[in-house]
Length: 198
Picture 1 (cartoon, rainbow, N blue to C red):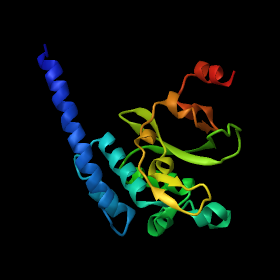
Picture 2 (picture 1 turned 180 degrees about the vertical axis):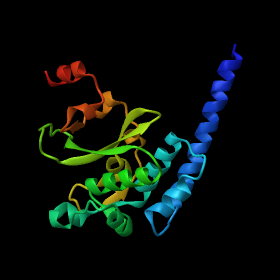
Picture 3 (picture 1 turned 90 degrees about the vertical axis):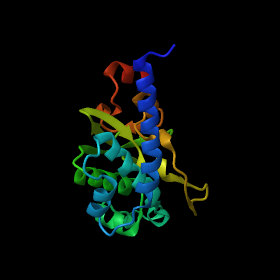
């Protein structure tokens, strides 16, 4: 038998699901001429912190293409959010710096994190970049680059294919393929980190 609290919880969950489905579709389609304009449209007054994060993440993942030319030529890489926004292209550092800037405009605290990824666990060399954002005083991990899509095996084409796995990912899952140079950004207790490295 459902209690009134259980019913209320289920209704709340369904309402949030509808909000995100509708809002994701709307936020992905916003096309404006400045970072500020996009943030104003996807995060209208009254938007809660987690809603802002989802809207911004969704916009970046659906509107920024992975820059294959910059992947091959490091001199073409940019970490200027305005340039990434204008060109609608970037490598991982471009995605994460744009996400960070959009969060700043929305009044959210966000950091850019560098480290190893995939099978490469070597510390001290930046091979990938992602973000942590503070929601209701708690840090959460996300990777807009990997969530946006993928590059084919011969690195000639990028495919948009949104992957929710990299949005507010559990730190125990994130550490499986993201290794920050600064271990505090694993968001895991030190004992867990030591156990992983053993």
